[in-house]
Length: 342
Image (tube, rainbow, N blue to C red):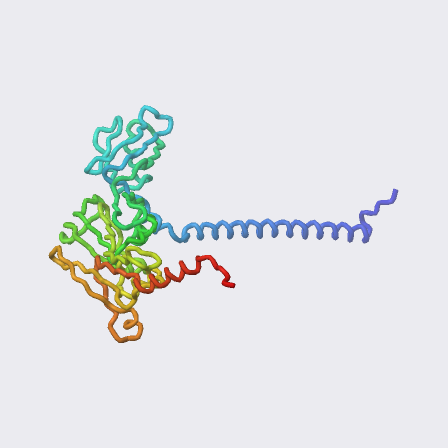
């Protein structure tokens, strides 16, 4: 049998196969290198995004800091004899745990920070104790909101909030709200607040315009402090009675005139005595009253000035007796039976 291994064609075929094998191997290695490079790049990108993820610092600052009188649930994995529910933080901001001789400072720490502190204290007895801390009830940062609001009550702040946000939780001012909003601020008792100015620790009284607060004006929208009492006094009122469509008490949020008050009450009815509107005014400092009369016709024609009303004024729109009598007689005549005269 003839040996073809030394034939030129056979040698060429062998060389071609070797070249193809080397080429495929090189392509495979290159693909592997590219894939590994892409994975490394993706991993690096993900790490960069995680490190530069916005909001980490701000979320740390916004975390609730435990305070005096808060109730805590403290759970230690596989250690039910050490776990505790409803642990109250005392007035100095400390708590006690089993097997730990000294008090643990809980105030001014977040839940995670306190859990780490307790775990460190237990290293004497257990290795890597897994501790979870939860705030069951928030009592350290309460504010009260009373007066002319739709939902009065005490509110427990779990983070820093401004006055306008507090009003939204109270469903806003009521219809009887006046023009001012007051903050009664007691002496600072927050263990986590350090202030070098002693004048800021004595409390005080802050009075703001309600409309400025509702507009979000920064000067009229302060941060709330623990223990603040916010009150919205009811507006002074005037009373429109008599021959109008909707007799009612009208809150004085802005200066209001007699013609404006009557318009708010729906306006005068037919047969009203608009040329002699009666205003009864309380005399300040005494139980007496003063009376004055105005004409809506003269006010409309600019012949006389529109009277500015004062708190507790009573505006009475009388019925015109003659017009009422004439209309009554005409109504009675219309109701009479009709008879033919032959």
